[in-house]
Amino acid sequence: MGRLTTHVLDTATGRPGAGIAVTVYRLDGERREVARTITNHDGRCDKPLLEGAALQAGRYEIVFAAGDYFRAQSTELPDPLFVDDVVLRFGVAAPDQHYHVPLLVSPWSYSTYRGS
Image 1 (cartoon, rainbow, N blue to C red):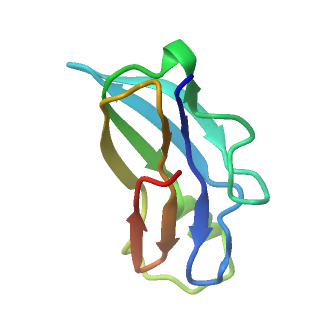
Image 2 (image 1 turned 180 degrees about the vertical axis):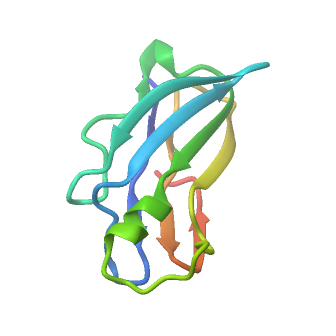
Image 3 (image 1 turned 120 degrees about the vertical axis):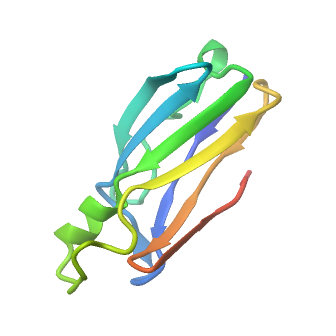
């Protein structure tokens, strides 16, 4: 059974990105919201974003509300923020596999990869 998971690490502090809103969209001719959650104290989601029949082959987008997270910290930031919403677009070719899409983020940069 395939599944889509994520986690967030705040690389500026070396801590999990706790309390970050995560929204998943399927891009199949239109942009449809298919999941919404908030990261827990460990920067992870309590359950997969999508799994089983809900994870289909195609294009997806995950939006991480990183800007809201940084605004809630006691860090001095510019206005407007350099990194605000982080939008990751990716494809699922084999929906029976595990797609782990982590976010490493700071107020000045972000990166991702397909994890395991």
